[in-house]
Length: 145
Length: 145
Length: 75
Length: 75
Picture 1 (cartoon, rainbow over the protein chains, first blue to last red):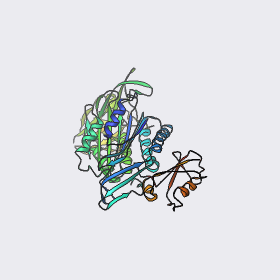
Picture 2: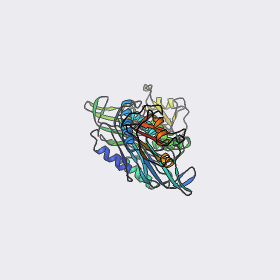
Picture 3: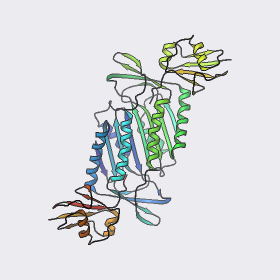
Picture 4: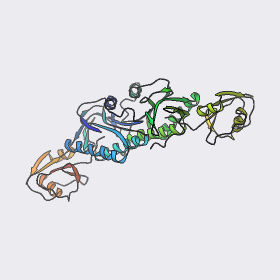
């Protein structure tokens, strides 16, 4: 289990590969499910040129560790990885990465889906978008649809 | 949308990156969900040293194309990628890759989960495992647990 | 009339043949009986006609490809 | 007695302060009133005590860190 905050842009696929290579579980996992959330260059039909992601560092760290522990209690997971960006973000850059490894597929898939929902609803991060008409705090997360 | 069969081992993460780079949707997708199924070196508590994956080429190709079309009708997807191995497979090698891109998270996550279940239950592939006690056709897929 | 018949995986090994051609049959079930010389049909055998899942009662026509295989285990 | 108080995101901008310290409060709600000089409390404000979500009625103690923030929008 590993979770961390990135101040700079990162390569989510490389992060998964790196994490997997330093894992001792190589031949045991039959399933890897991942989710990557990236910055889009529009929201509510308005162009977004830039974004700042603020967080509550001590609480974020604690929350993500608890979240991984809860997932591991609930599903038969071999490993999990969560990475979340903060700071200045440009369109197409990754914001969040979640990866789950398990022996069989449902644990990895269901845990990955659960983790992103929990994180979206509870992890103390806040987005401020820069649009044509100025800066604006994002009011609330969509329900994913 | 793209689906294909690989005769040789492949790098699933690189395949996702390559597919994404040649996509024209770069700044539109906010969500990427992926699932990778890999060969484990045990099954039913028995060591498995090797596997051969047979398929019905013409039907497989047709089935995977239909599957991607169905997913695209059902969810608001920007792109999908399916890769499936056939032939001689060694432990830790990837067997199947599914990746889904969408604007918002639920479409990518739910489509990815649906695609792997459908593929597992209906795509004409068959596994033959080499164990300590000889070769054995896998009788049926687990329910993912 | 000519019908292409295929057997896959464990079924190919049990029947002892992967591809064959028969001259005439009215249904997928009849294709099985003719192509296997009336071998017992395992209860879980699946059938596809022209690359689509079908029933053993489904009609077959000249030029069709009829495939028999065990439950799939990909992914 | 010393209580650390934090405001995040839009709330920090509205209140005009990110971090402050107050001397005494019995509950998280009282922390808000003292730290903001009784500013109106938006209906959707969330509160955490010592890095865990809490209620405005939750008691606070000496040394606690009490944070107020708007609905989260990460991921």
